[in-house]
Amino acid sequence: MPRPTKQSPERGNARLRLLEAARDIIRAKGFAATSVDDLCRAADVTKGAFFHHFASKDALGVAATEYWAETTTEFFAAAPYHAPPDPLARVLAYVAFRKAIILGEIAEFTCLVGTLAQEVYSSTPEIREACARSIFGHTATLEADIEAARSDRGIAGDWTAESLARHTQAVIQGGFVLAKAGNDPALARESLDHLDRYIRHLFHVT
Image (spheres, rainbow, N blue to C red):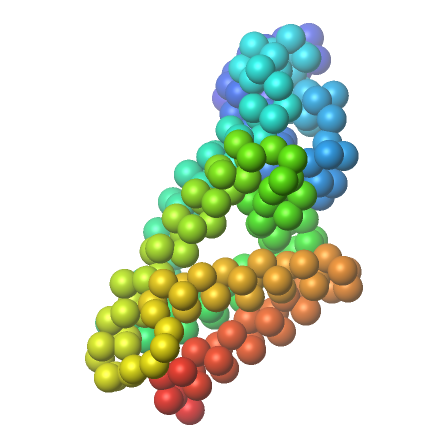
């Protein structure tokens, strides 16, 4: 479907365009700095169309978080790191894949829900909770491979598959923060290199 023109701003899926605009602008500017006018302008819709689909900017924030979770779930489900037959190889391939997709401008590879969670965790519980569902939902997809790798290699210790899966996300999100602070994507890739080394150490792999 062609992008709507200024003369026909309501044509097409205005809601979807607003969600995509929110995904991109919030990652670049943050939630507080993103105005309804910014979103309408980027999506090429009227303010009336915005409020037809969303009762408020906060409501849009929740919906954008849910849209992010839906689309990234599909993206990661189709990613090549699932292919290796060995579960530890899949875990390490996941880390390598996360490093490989750190490309382009910082706003293009960083995480919408991580950005939102840092900014609104105390001010907007509804968005924070949607972010938690997205982050921890993705974390859970790693647990089976980690547990299988532990079992295959007889790895014991005072850590669990769930805790290591959460740690992967702590490193990834922390890497994004460093990349933003230093204005350098290489800092995020560096964090993934250290995560790879840490996992290999846990599983006694050289």
